[in-house]
Image 1 (cartoon, rainbow, N blue to C red):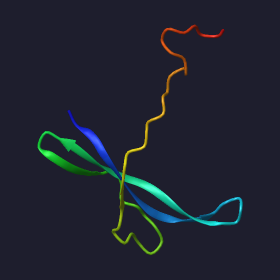
Image 2 (image 1 turned 45 degrees about the vertical axis):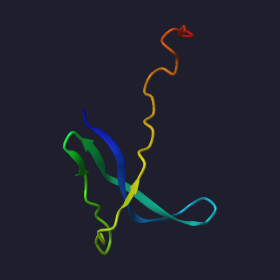
Image 3 (image 1 turned 90 degrees about the vertical axis):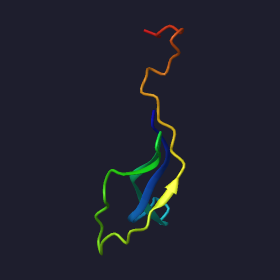
Image 4 (image 1 turned 30 degrees about the vertical axis):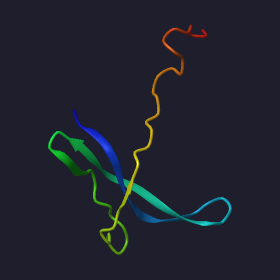
Length: 80
């Protein structure tokens, strides 16, 4: 079974936050996946940005997926 070991992201632009600070905007563009034959790179998208993408990307630990359930354990009662 394959599993994601790293996420690939790159800077796609900048924005100004509510405090007036300039921040970088990041986009996840793919993953490094562990397979039975070794690591593989899967690109999901190639970023389009003004001036073109320079080819550099960050390799980060995968983010935890958010639960899409009700927020209650299976053994608890639903409050309605």
